[in-house]
Image 1 (tube, one colour):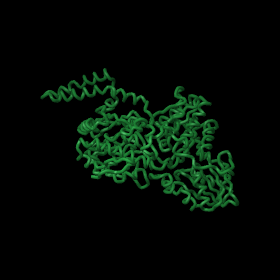
Image 2: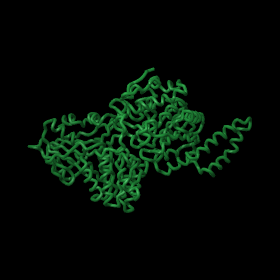
Image 3: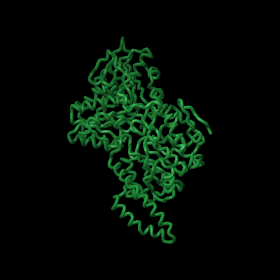
Image 4: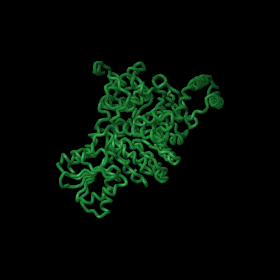
Length: 625
């Protein structure tokens, strides 16, 4: 066992944790050692995430839950699926990845999410929410058909219980005796959960006495010699009737589960007892666990939303709650709030991402007017909801991450595009996002949005252009319009000699141009840096409205024998290919070079490292000029 490690001026023990190389080692610990192990894990979580960034509050809340899971069940025979997956850090620590934990979310390091290629203990990919029950049903069915032993356990938060999760519940059947769902109820999603489902869970928590009575009553009956089991079965109908009369129905029992809980998610005794019972039962089981998001780190407990996803920070310094105003998301939120002051038709919609998308400003200002809507993790619903609001005379702005907007494609087509309703999309985190890796890179919105009839897309490179583009999206466009912008702050400024056309900025060559370079969004900075590095003199077009492609920009491109297009999006179906096709169809026959992302499955790393991986750093771009 290892003695102590230094952390600032203090020390903390990692002896118990360092001795655990697999879940089997965890089972050797005594019950009295578990609180000390939980403390070691929380200390390490804070220390590591403060250096790497990542999801902190959600992981702090499931430490005891994860320890208890691995003590009762036997991974990988029992398959554990974490919904969204950002709360899997303790799971990684207990499944042989302790030595590599310092490289969490780093290039060539551990992913911040479950990853099958990383460990046999990671049962299924999970970077987006509400998928765990569907995946668990699939794995449970596979085990049944292959005659394999073991349970399949889905760990899902109350905030993820929407959309696909309810579709999955509709496919539960009593024959799935190897299925266990653990509902991690922390009364949060990413923003505060206020849905009717959340209220239903609150009612269950407030009727815990019924379930304690039910369990005790059944145990007493079963201890009666000869007649106990028969009596229990005989009066089960009476118990159900009494429960429904007193407490109404429990949605989980109505959907085919045996319900256990609520359970204190920080009590090893309660967790162990409930998980052991779930393991023994030969029917679908749902264990309702109540946890505290941010548990053990006071700042995260007080403000779990702010500590959901964090950048690097000093754990010894109390963090301020306010978010930096220097980001595209925050600037958008402030713009929309100001626009909402002038136009009462404007309403804002998001999917559990009020703070991350900057809409907390709009929410605070117009709370009393009811013009802000957080629909929970339900992107498809958000698209239909917004389209219908426009049909009713409102002007909706829907702000969703690029990687999450993928879930709403059918609704964007069927309910927005075909209906020709005026919905404005704020496509946040467009492009590479860095440390969150493959599941969060925003590289597909351009290819799929350009397939939607009548869609218009803007992709500003600066805050000023973003505000101007939202103005145009709201008041010049009439159909589905997207304004896409990257994660983080503005790093590019247009040169003073930029000449603005209607839909793009043109930067003339200093002397005689050696060709034309075309790009859009923040990657314009890397292109300009590459031209300087290569010592080349090109005329440059920085598109602002990127789709439909501006005819004037295509006409300008036809003057050149060489055109280079640089794009921070997937190559296949991207804008660069469309630009080339339209040029060639017009009879142009010059040299065309396209640099976009060939393989859009980009692993985690810093933004700069990700740019290098895909050949979009200045040095790589300079090579093609």
